[in-house]
Image 1 (tube, rainbow, N blue to C red):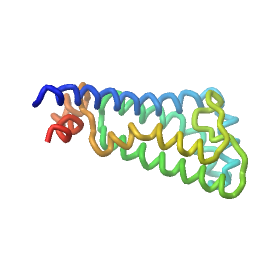
Image 2: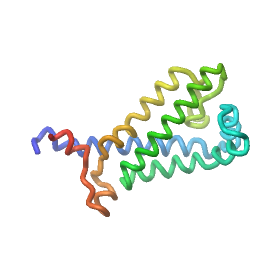
Image 3: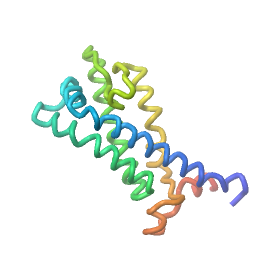
Image 4: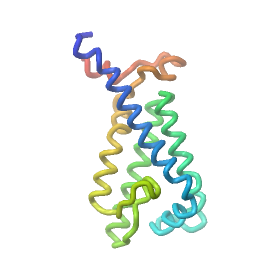
Length: 162
């Protein structure tokens, strides 16, 4: 592998850890305010009330779990797929709320980061989703459980080297 490509697996690891940090940060920020997050989910008006509360109570822990899977490098591509689908759903929820003229905080990071749903918030979320999207396309498996347990190859460095 040429010298300039030797650092790519480490860049991939850094991007995977960045994706993990976004998911863990989003989940952890919501946990202390579960009741207010539940109310916020209800204000989006997408889920029936019977589903909004369970969704709001499960989502923060699911996000933390997703982040932990990415950080550990376990099922990197599958975790990134789940994260990418969630990001698209979150963006669609924000877009429909904005299009309907509903003024509300996006709730992305609990009350740690408050931002009203709109084009800038959606653009920010796309930017925060880039590391997750990259792990779907090029799963970085440097220092990963995927590599240790399953012998999975690091696609991040390999793709760029060809």
